[in-house]
Length: 437
Image 1 (tube, rainbow, N blue to C red):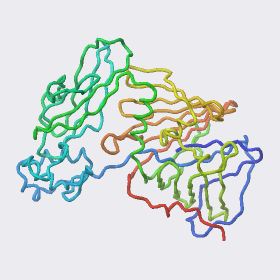
Image 2 (cartoon, rainbow, N blue to C red):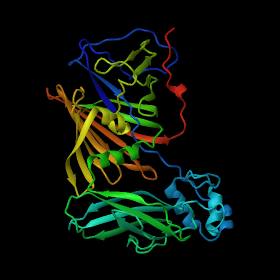
Image 3 (cartoon, rainbow, N blue to C red):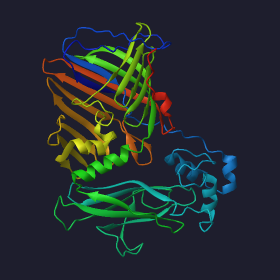
Image 4 (cartoon, one colour):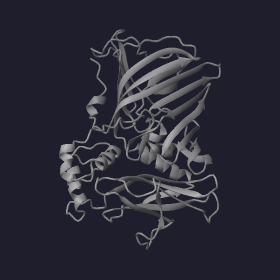
């Protein structure tokens, strides 16, 4: 959950979803106002940050018996991939699982995977305690018959290289005998500590095909960090989840809300809490309705006087890194072993935007925390318990946001998210703002 802070001149509009009946009617144009201890409007909005509960079904032994003595390998491979349904093409290259099973028994078959059956959804390089460089690759096969045979890396360039002549990597379990391998290699660098270098990693399957190279960056610059963050989060076209949010005021529980939330991209959101309070966000317009109080309405948001859709888009930066780059300049403030980084985002010249900071686990492109200070309140968001939603893409399962006011008041909202569905093809109709009668 995210808590938006909106400075206003008069009493704030109070949007309260507690103890409301299910939504049954269209909104009226009435608004409810209430005095507050401060002149801040705190609107709790469920964000699309979280993980998918991957569906892993039991393998049908009768069906797979046709394919040989490999039930265990199939279960292992497909559990890591996210599904083991025979008729699906879960790796999105056009071949069904069964077609790839057949190709696996004969790698020369015409329906064999065009670039090999191995993928490397994630890889990284970092410094060890002795300042050696450790290169890691998470290698997975999309076919139960094609186990990982070897892995290697090249430093700084692949021009003119011959497959199989690079720096060999070792399987962490001691042998390349599985469809899913964590491979590592350690070397003593001849270059200065902190100098940026690129490493190129790939793997070979037992079908003797090498997968495409994956680039790994040691000592990344800030653009490298932003690129990896963008690669992690931009894969989520839409998200659906259930969330339970507990709000604490000075360590005292104030309320607990549960809701169903649906997102499409960074700027479209639909939510309904367990009492029926409904809200829709579509770009810079927000609509809500409270049936019990017969209160509802809509508002259009503007930033710095600009109420156009393009000029008033707001999301947490990792959901729209390209837009963030047009508003802020990022810099690295601290790094640990080339694995985790703290960064500062400062507004570009002439842009009215707050100074923010964020932390990231660069090995996965996962943002671990964000923070900033505006007027009389400091905000900190922590993104906890990350889980791999689908190969190579990570999200948190707990979001804790803390608001620390200069007055001493502290508000904490901790949200736990589950029952996640990702990239289900939500239509735009769900996010249409209802028109007043």
